[in-house]
Image (cartoon, rainbow over all chains, first blue to last red; front, side, top):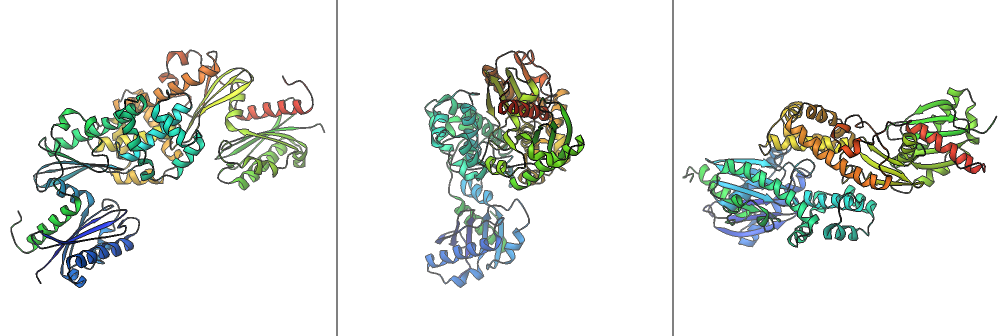
Length: 296
Length: 296
């Protein structure tokens, strides 16, 4: 059997794998549990291996084949801490390249082209490829970063609801909605916030966009502030990535375009493919480089 | 020996006590460790008792006297949870009244008058007395409240420094200063933020005010945003407390007046006394009420 390549898209909730020919033709796909190398590197190793084996079974290939495969992994959490080497040394592949989940998303979205990609989900990160180099802006996480992300938007809604409750800001439909959800008990809202992870705040982001679309003044102010931050970040990233193409990814990608500056809307393109396809493409590229083939 | 009264000002870092004659004349003062009834009620009971006994020793009175005393306690954390009764039942005083640390601060600051008091420290809370009733606005804590407080201001500085680092916002003297403190390593800043309590963020607030006074654009934007929030809250509290007097307390009280709207600056008054004096005054008032005396 010829050599195989494997692409891995590993995140905090699940891990996806695709096994492919060296030219990138996908033969099978698999999925497993969380692969967060920051919070649980040993479990991430198990999840990555399971997803790769599941992809082999899906392709009708013996799972032992992964020992001869070249894998490219895009993983969340690679920008913090020093666990990448620990994980790499314990994975079952012949060759293992690990990079960020952002890089495989960019590769999937715009292929080998120059341009910018913004991931607008619970958090936010902005990326650009220029002259073969990938640059990153943001992605620092919920506590002092990720402005414009769903978590910060949901957080801002709870904060605004307290201001409305106290009579400091006017009430509006969106603050009434969230206060009603907490039975108009601010202490319940404070307790929720104390126990919340970013994803818990982020679940309220779509509610804010919905009310903004209906011109609710409270929601408009929140979305406009978030969009101002995203527009500023897009200005910064397109200064690097150029003004030819901009691709939005993540759960808020369908909601943001209406709120972006015309200069950004004008260059929006749809993603070519997803992050897993990006991981396969990067695995194929590294395989060709190792084989002494064209580096395209 | 005549009956005695005791005033207690209990907070997260220390507990102060004053023992006094029933007319409020202070005979002695004492101090002890943290008295946070939310995080450690049993230790709070120990601290409160120790402070009261220290006040007795300072006055030359046997410490056993506290068993016959009427105490008024202003404690942090009484607005959340249900630990007030637990603490009250285990304290050694004959009569024990527990209310918020805010109430004794208000009593100390403006006595029995009508008016508004803002505590501008690590957090923020706004209070007003009108027709004998005390009203509270804010004070919801760092996570989704306390806008304008030192913790939120320090947090905003770290966030702004990341934006400056990423080229999203212009750099300025204040963001350069904080980035230099973290050796221009954003991940160190993110890690600091992850581990920080409100007080840790709050330590950067004076730095922001200093740079704003020197017209640093980055610091000006941060202080102006914080002051906007404080001005809005003062509008709300003076709608209740009237426009006769406004008293600022807390670590940021000396720094904020220059940034307040003229309508608020015009009614600023100095505090008459501190929170411990307020606790003694309230203890004296409750003692008179129990003794069937005039309720003043």
